[in-house]
Length: 226
Image (tube, rainbow, N blue to C red; front, side):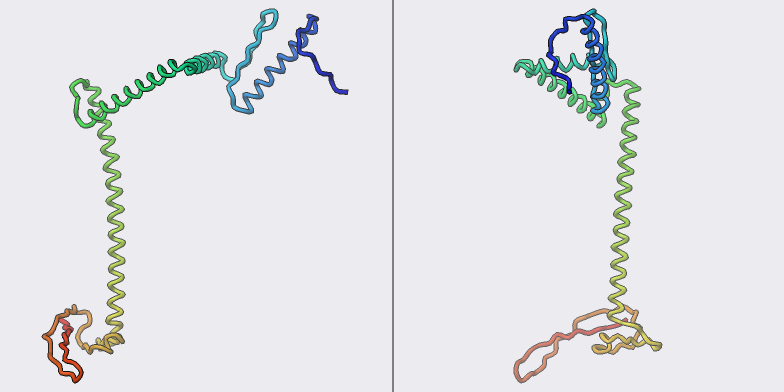
């Protein structure tokens, strides 16, 4: 049979009360330890016996637990009333304004302004900060320039390859006599000169031609090789 339900009330017998206190105290401390380990919690337990003896457990430091408890309790109490909440946010705003003022002052000093109140040591520290920042800027600038040069080289190689392919399509492969065997050139023009010479295009004078159906003017295009 299972144990019967125990009525939660003060135990009159002093011996039984002491035994129960010892058992439940150990169980409570054990549960607090397990809770701290399993859940990564900060736990602190303080127990005073009926005779005034102290028993305690803390997984960090009892002093830090109590200080954290008092601080959290005070903050929660301040936020309970509207007036306290207003004062809290006023303090936060004042802190942010001070931080902004410090940052603005530091920025002006970085720009070489408002240096009259600085000592030699402060000026030396400011100079070191500027040199460190300048080195970082130069390194980043060099990285960007290197990337741009590599990209230009890549585009230049692509353009060169396209020019070579276009040259092969126009002139094809030459035979032993230097005559082009390209079908494109053979079907349109006959060129016996060196095919590597530059080619220039120019417009010829228009010639009048008579047609039975209509009279039109044709603009001729001449190909010269130098």
